[in-house]
Amino acid sequence: MFAINGLMVAIAGLILSSRLGAGSPSAGNIAELDAIAACVIGGTSPAGGIGSVAGAVMGAFIMSALDNGMSMMDVATFWQYIVKGAILLLAVWMDSATKRRA
Image (cartoon, rainbow, N blue to C red; front, side, top):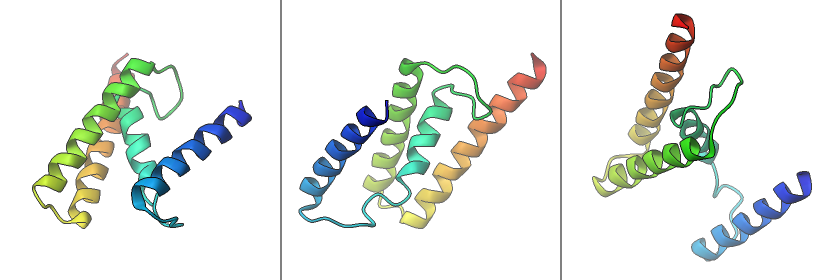
């Protein structure tokens, strides 16, 4: 499992450095926020539980559409982080609210 993870990270690093044209240690800063938000939006509970691949892919699609849309509208990076964080908080709040009712 860890070997597969290492292989996937190496491939992702190669792709990212080829897109940037250089290696930068700060190239992936705040990328984990997008990954966690995509999974939570897709239905994976942050408190543990079962999620689906389709839900995670749908969450990734929503986050990438949001990111691309805000970039095309020339929204400042500071505000993009705030919007993404607010959406993540909303998704976590909705998850906890539905668990309380069940």
